Image (tube, rainbow, N blue to C red; front, side, top):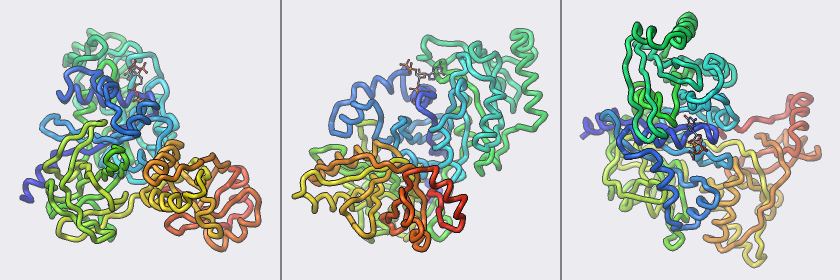
Length: 524
Ligand code: G4P
């Protein structure tokens, strides 16, 4: 049995794609499925999304905004491996859920639009990857159209995010006239041919360097010159530093025309790590082959209004998960029967019978399970909590109906605990005038909707004029309270935070009164 668990986990790769909106994440996902034979024709992911039935308000909200709120895990087979691709919703209006997904993956593909380079959202998501030392594979996308010089993009990766780029493939032909890629490890040239709208796998032709030099002329010479420069600075793919999150293998391609997609997919298998043993709260590794354990990284409630259902998405960390098994929730000590376990693809669910380390399972009817909870089968374990992230938007909340204050408070407590938003309270005022904090406006909308639907407490959420937040402590907060434009509040976990109306004032304070405790909230 334990051999089966080990061999199943060895053939898994659990990863996410991070990118700024429009860099090509959806297109690339679709092309991965196309190459894996999981889609007959590219375009199906979009088409499928369009056909989705509005089965709940979540779906209505998703459709209204044209975004995916329901993070999903796609599983597909490629070269005898199972790839679990976790969705990080790529909309500008993203939420803490986006970040939390990164707690459940072992590697990341960072997609950059090669005309744009590193963009703000890529940067934010990358910071989360860095805090976990996640290995990052970089894909310079859209090379089929005019863009920036790839060498310049490498410089940007290094200078802006401090990750050492090590190109694994290098383009032949300038952006806009993209002919193929050289595999720097083998020296082989792969020439691509476009298919109509990239709906089928791009035919590839392996060409030896001599023939490539004769046929590609100046484009080949130019690529060789650049590769010479890369060789000179020893920018070679280096596994130890990649796995430590210090260097990034770079691939060049075009998701639209399928150029370079197979190389990238190969890299996910050949370079990205298989699920490693998960480290528990005490810092000990939980061996993969022992009994089943998992942690909850996302909770989705109210997906179907008529059922009041609640799905907890768990990542399996050890052992074999079998539908129907009873797991213990470490936080509450209560048993949880996994009678309804499913994978979720958009609005569609299918039942999961078994799963192995690295897999994501959606546990239906998961009342009583919260984000960060550990579940175990027979040997007790507790995994570290999922970090909360620095909020960037703030709002005030109050019940619209003064007769519903009790329901409002109950909802506030529950939704805070679930991590839908962070509720900050004034120690002197309690629940009377809480400030909601989130990484994206979307979280407030979800919060208001759930207060209304599940707790029957319609609320008014108004944007609050804060610009920055820091952790502080009792003694610093005394001084901070004397200054205008700052509020001292308490998080659900008891920690004190200072909210600043002006970032400028915060900076001045940091300079003028360095003795004050004003710590960044990176992963609190
Ligand atoms: P996202 O999920 O990261 O937001 O990006 P998405 O894949 O939706 O791609 C955004 C736009 O960029 C799409 O164009 C898509 O076709 C285009 N795109 C993606 N990859 C490539 C590429 O390699 N080369 C080129 N030239 N374009 C690419 P759109 O006009 O917004 O949509 P549509 O034409 O697909 O309907």
